[in-house]
Length: 403
Image 1 (cartoon, one colour):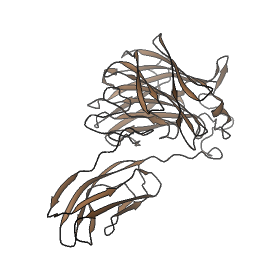
Image 2 (cartoon, rainbow, N blue to C red):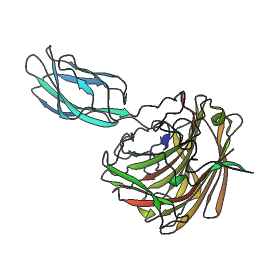
Image 3 (cartoon, rainbow, N blue to C red):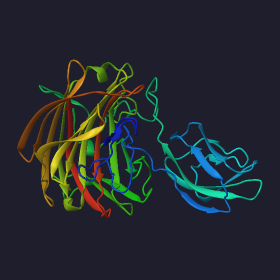
């Protein structure tokens, strides 16, 4: 899915895709796992070659790693004559991680995220050898909540943030978020949909440019682009509004604001230059506090059905709503999403309004978990097609209202 939610990976949502329901599960000839909540299992290693191998066999225990944290795994040999010699003979292991030539232990500290494929050759005391293809996936580290705002993050005391919260009868809102600072951007590609950055990475290109005057309704639109060479890859952008790394200066260190909010409205104008090249476009609201995660994910599945899907946080999957989604290319589309956190901490999708047509859902799902993280973020995601054709989407008048 979806979301990147807060923690760049815990936020960012994200989200897997299926060929029939998109955003985030991609399972055709590939098997995928999600960034945020997991979807499937990693590809199994396969034997690449065997020369004079007798009964020599290779097995491996290579769990998913985390950027910046110590990694421990192992490659083992059996069926041959010890001692064995282990060597990486093709591909690349994660930066900062190494294979011990005599023991087969895999250790180190990964310094970059991504999916790393490599071949290991094992030879025994009698000259028998065997090669096997292996993979290690490295995810982005969760950012711990700082006890106080990072010095570089708060705006100067005399300068309000770019989209200062405004109050009204309907609660408080952030307006023109598309032109605010604090946007993170990531690529996510099959089979693992692990965040990568900066662009280009893993065969994915993505970008955002603010201050676009045309096309624009306010004169301050932002253009988002996804492309590259890896089919069915996504680009995800997220903005931390409340909590650690808030772009609005609302760090909420005592979590009192994050835990008190219950109603959210995501309102935006979007313009696609060629939405027929898109698998889906996704709009998410994410709320975290007390170890709980509320992921309100909405994807307009343009390919395979032209309908809205919503994210079931308890099952970690997209649920088709049957609500049509036919955004128009070459003109502005207006979207309003209303969601609610119930008094017993469930997620309710209230309504979807696209170009004046409102579909009332009132569908309720259980919450997820997000230990050690709190705050409110929003996401925008663009999904690539089978050729990863480049296309653009402009956002304008992006507002999040909350109460």
